[in-house]
Image (cartoon, rainbow, N blue to C red; front, side, top):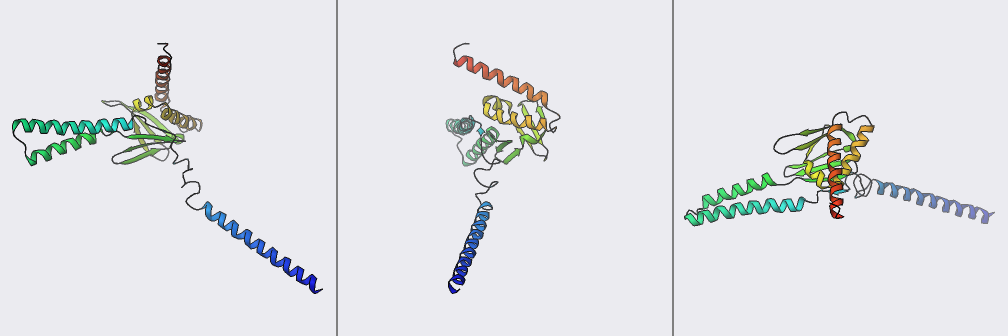
Amino acid sequence: MESESGSESGNGGFQDGTRAGEGAGADSGSGEGAGPGSEGDGPGDPERVVLAEDRRWVHDLWAAFFCSLSLIVLLHLVDLAAGTVEAGRSMLWAGLAVTLFVVLFPPRVTAGRHWLSVRGLLGERRVSTDLLTQVSRRDGIAQRIVLKDVRGRRVEVDPTTLAANPLLWHELDRGARVAGERGLLRTGSPVLRTLRERIESDTARAVFEASDLV
């Protein structure tokens, strides 16, 4: 009897310990799920994973820098030739160079699954492409494609950037198709269709040229 009671006591202690260990493991697992590695905050979060970006951005950034640098050097050379080099004029030329750099600074366009982001000097703007409600084209000296989503967020993208980066266009087009299927995108289909035809035509021409067919 004593051995049986001891066995039962030992089994009960083992079961209690096992349950406690399972509870601790569950608590630990739930803690890991709520930590930085969980979906929504970690590198696997689809809202953060970049699938496409503007391949010309670095080149355009250096071009803006060299244009600004060339301006300040040229103005100082003019002052040096005229004998009018002064600290005040140098500060003025530096201000002009900085202003030119700000004007020429290229926005960085990136995209992921169902989102597109445009980052400039003043911050980042992002829209959910699968929740787009409006796509329009703003004409003028510099044409822009304007995107708006259901959250009221808005971005402007240079159509030449999309044309030069088929992966960016692919992510935008995929999200816009989902928005259209959901009945959210009610204005802008002709704009997207025109842009799609232009990009497909440019891509086909590039393939032909690479194949020496044109």
